[in-house]
Length: 257
View 1 (tube, one colour):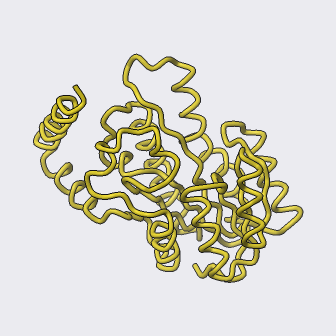
View 2 (cartoon, rainbow, N blue to C red; view 1 turned 45 degrees about the vertical axis):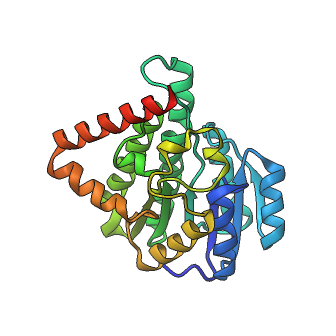
């Protein structure tokens, strides 16, 4: 899909990957880029920079997602590309409480589902549309130190796959973004040893790759190409993969002791 003259919505558009996408998509000649974020001031700053629109949106709330889509479609026009990009990370494993699990589930998974629930019927009725969901390499592999992040990002990847399989022949295009470490505010509170093994790339680089992938209508976007090799190793020999990850976690534990 060409981005020129398209109406594009990006959640998590106030900073990081979302803001970089907004700038890059605007540079491609998008008709209008809508930056949605619970940080309205941040979203407004990006929107002002690119001649876009800011809409305050908390993607953990179904009502906010519905309001975002309804507002754009009624006031601006049909949404051609919806980027479900907002996400959070939290550390911990089985000790993480239910409220924390529910919150990350709402943001990292249900936000994608709720947007698609509204948009897919509209897009199919119009003959097609595009959904780009931001997940993570953790959704293909694992995230040492964070069970909630691993689980929710796996679910996000799986949902994107299901959308592509189920509705691809009807004109719905789907991409899923699965980076490792990206230089954004999200990694500020994360042990960089767990995300920087294969390098930390810029949000602008990720946005460039997204433009290419959308142009090619490619499903899987991997800003760290080595992830494709990891996927092959994991699929070919799961036992060896788990053993290798156990060794890496033991090494990280020793370094932090």
